[in-house]
Length: 476
Image 1 (cartoon, rainbow, N blue to C red):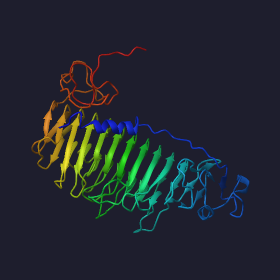
Image 2 (image 1 turned 180 degrees about the vertical axis):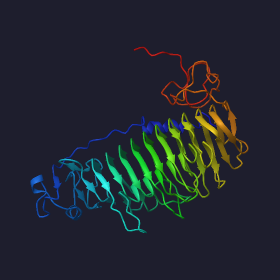
Image 3 (image 1 turned 30 degrees about the vertical axis):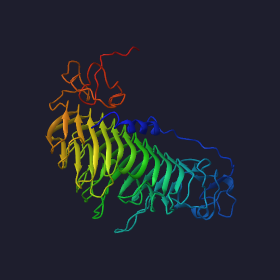
Image 4 (image 1 turned 90 degrees about the vertical axis):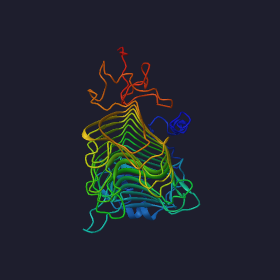
């Protein structure tokens, strides 16, 4: 069952991930070379000052840049795509910096980082040009590895980028065994008007694979919207943030909305999710107006093969699919130690599934899945739904407000839940609510805080739902 021992790994996860805040880092520049690029320059110049700037992306692409170099592009102008490869950079502690100078920000028609490492990109826009009907646009920003022998390319930070018009916004991919990328931070970026995905990581997938292509990928403070999806018969599309083949990763303080409306595939798209991942967290995020013409369209999801995954302190509303979904697909690696706690779902499941949704379509290995202290507000739709007959001791649903209908299969353990309208105000319990101290005291790690930042236990017993009521008054 969901014991303290079972959640010890989750506690270790947060020691690894920290307090859901990834600080924007500054790296020392040991080499003082700073190069300038401007449409008013000339590629025959030395590029060492704004007055002697280079002119084109082609010049940048043809040169090799050592660790610590800085490349600045004149703001307010558009440049063709830039590409860096194994001859550029290579030192995660002495990174190449790419940014803008002058007035406004530089705009690129794409960025590629292939088999290289050690880059900071900040305060630029990436706008992919339109392509003829029937063709696919390129990704906005590509991190791409063709290396093997479990090679991890380390050290990337993307901050304050606006990315639009691409097939995907920011894509991280390794194509061989467990080779890929490590120490990648995507901070305060806005991705919109893309076709397939906003932010995505993927690797070489094999259900018998040991290890993961990527490590330490952090997405924080990003806004993703209008990721349309498309009529794709092979796979889902229209995802906001979807990370896979990754270990030690978090998605925090992000918002995804108005996406997936052209997806036709089933399984389908979701707002923010992980699959084939280990030691991962989604927290303090919001997802809404996730749509589909196929299925799924959940706000949040921990999907096939996730191990040691947690969704907490998130707000989901007005989605076609579940607010919070946990699902295992056929052919996935085993799934275990999944926690969904202190989340709010309001008016989700408008076309498919339940507000909280659990499935195991392939009958693959699943263990230790817990939904507790969530608040679900519904009308006449499903507050909770499960698919498949479950063995005992696998799935637990406790101390939740489930205001809506319930549709479950066998052997899921329900305890301490409320199934009636709780008369909440801004999702909070009011004084005198019958849900105060009405839950059960769970015998495993419940976390320190509720959705609103209150202590997770105030009184003799836990409250029901995502709010732990306290009579303690703050003193100004």
